[in-house]
Amino acid sequence: MPRDGIERLDTPDHDTTSTAGKKKRKAKVKGSNRVARWFREMRSELKKVVWPTPKQVANNTFVALTIMAASAIAIWGLDFMSSQIFQAIITYIPRLLRG
Image 1 (cartoon, rainbow, N blue to C red):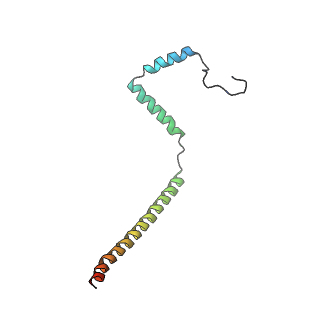
Image 2: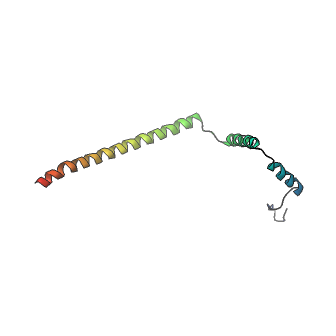
Image 3: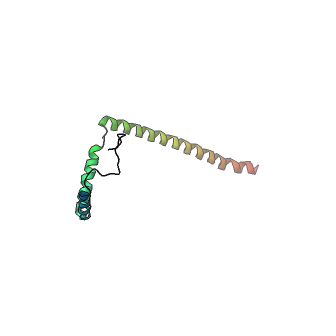
C-alpha cells in the first residue's frame, strides 16, 4: 500500500498464477452454465431491489389515474373547442362570401 493511504488499483493483490487458472476455467464455460449463471445473477440483483409497499402502490396508482383522467378531459375540451371553431368557420365563411 502506498504511503498516502490510497490503495492502488492497478496492482494485483494475489498471485498472478491463479488469474491464469481463472482465465482457463472461464474459457470452458458452456452455454447451459452461462444461462444458469445469468439466472443466479438475476436472482441476486432482484434481492437488492427495494420493492414498494402496497400503500405506495395504491398511492402511485391513484396519482397516475388522476393525471390520466385530467389529461383526457383537457384533450377532450381542446378537441371540442377546435371542432366548434372550425364548424363555425365552415358555416359562416360561405354566408359572408355570398353577401
